[in-house]
Image: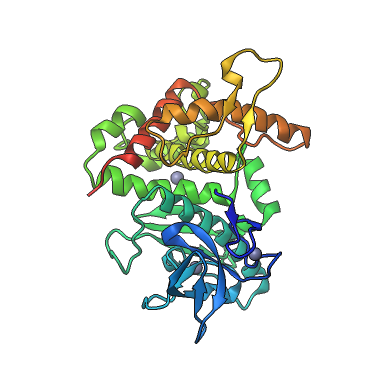
Length: 351
Ligand SMILES: [Zn+2]
Ligand SMILES: [Zn+2]
Ligand SMILES: [Zn+2]
């Protein structure tokens, strides 16, 4: 994620900020420019953005719930921004607890869409493309059961309960996962969506199978086997995570999520001018200066070269605070080859 700057007063701003704390200008995010802009009021609930003054803007309708700070051009027929227009179902907002959880969901969702915009990936909703659109259901648990987070043919269901930190942490521990976050869920599930779009629709099966294995393997049987027999002992030699061993679809989605983690973290590191140069390590493996724009990298090798030393340092920082590692994963050469595949896929020319 970039750091942003107030066009009026130069204050450093963060992605979720709604108002500049120094000059008190209201702020709105312009997806077309992936930038946050200070706003001046115009007529009829419209705004002039200092970053793009020739256009009049409105806030996304979800701003009314304080879950979105993205702008929509005033002459668009759309009421929702390019992120929120994918929401098919939101929870019952007369329940204050639902609203609190949905706000956390939308923080993760907007960060996901930011990265998709930066990667110039297509994000049609079901109005744009009924057969191939992307949609989200944010569902509270019914009285007699639990909602399962997952993807089905463009529809991503997210269990609202995952926004409860204690509940999510309990699930993380029960599943033996080193990492479980809302943003991680969004990045994983959208990985299934992009498998459909960039592999299946483009008839890219063979190249994908050569890297991730044959996805025609029975999915339900694979899931059952995963939960009854556990993971292969040498999984770290071949997969980004234990869950990726389940089935080639899950391997792809997990790898996709990691790719999004990596490009986002590297953009943040670059925005802060991060460098790591440990005094005692002569080995190049521990040294990095994050100069590259991860969205413009020619190959994944350029990213992994800085990612490994950076995570070594950031994991050590987290341990200094008594926290779990920032990136609690080891990337084997096979896992790096899978991440390279995703990098090339994302950057391949599309129709
Ligand atoms: Zn300001
Ligand atoms: Zn919105
Ligand atoms: Zn999955």
